[in-house]
Length: 562
Image 1: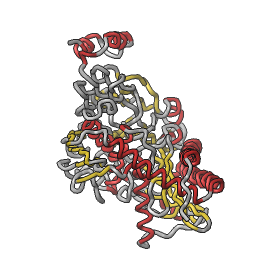
Image 2: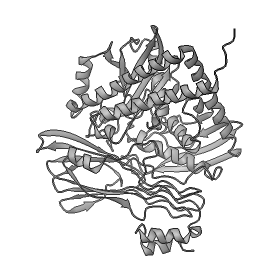
Image 3: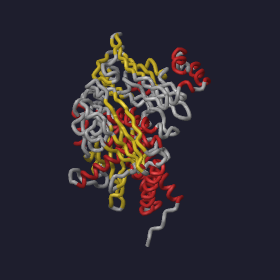
Image 4: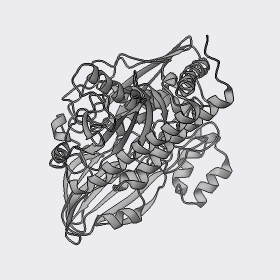
């Protein structure tokens, strides 16, 4: 007898409930975490994945979009390793830990936990989350080694292992981890928060299954996946057939001071969208390589920006075909260093997608956003508190202008919803003083709808000695304007030591810069690209920007007057 078709109301309620479970996991994780980068900046994500193939079922709305595809790939990698006998099979109460970027990950600082969810003695789902740990060892505090030439220099690499076995933490594995990371005594708070989020998800998932039955929920999940695929296919047909090409550039790999090229050709074939990266730069020496999972996830998130109405589900990715990344720096294999892949290269990939499709979908696609997470790591010893610390600062930038309005200023990065931790929290936790925290004036690319403005902040080290490292980008060229709009301003980093100000050789990439009390670091993040010809900008908007000091009179006349 055929299974009755699920009614629309029940389908909508179950879909919303799955989303709510993930949202509650996100909230639990952030509220319980110790590190400001998780607790305040929300650099984390939680999701539910299929038991048989690891396919994405649901993810929290406030989780990082770049983790959508990545956690699907890492779950699939775990399933494959279990099937091959490489990784121990799951039991109730187990939680795996993994941060290996070559097994469906991003970089070593993004640590994933995976909980096997059992129902009636059968593996029914995987619950997974990712949190950005402030440090996982390696050459520099914070893990962003700008000049690493091998994976070992970037930190401790963990294949999937059971950190929790039948509900109890494996102290021996934890001791190995603690022995290889800085400020390890502080990480236990993040570990417990990460595990607790998964346990909350498991409890809520049980309530959902008890209410609607396993069969009904399974039917709803299958229907959600099918409809997501159908909806994406339908939206793809809005794109004119033919090839749409673009280029995006990374300043350098941190070791060789030459740009890296992302060459992209996007082509619609029926209701499928093909992304061809042939002609992109080969694998690089420094840490700006991208692993396959991050590259694919970057394409997915870019399309998610363009078609946000498609539900988050594995079905939404099925019509997106990524080709010809083998042999390029977008398909890194061990031991290529990859610390910059998730936060920087991923955003250049998204920028390439936007630049390729903005002419084809001018009402949906924006000019390029700032496209850098502004990774700034500072590590040292605080003599006042008598303890070591690792501070990790991320920062926002300008969004690109679009067909309807100007770009947002100081928005979060393309890859997620993470925001800079509040200044007050950073000054409370670390021996630093912020001398400025303002908009990067004049940084928005000129256009009919200008780009948003980046961030301008300056930090002084107050006490003790410290080492600073940067892995940022867009210091050589600014975010691309669209349809006649101008590029946004570049990223600028200045380090002042003993009164002497310098700029890193690689502009916004450097490591192991020794700082003493009184030394300062100033960062000005990029503005978004402009959209449309600048001489078509509404005069009232020009005057408003002048009144608020966003541009100087000279710059405004030069940029916006015909």
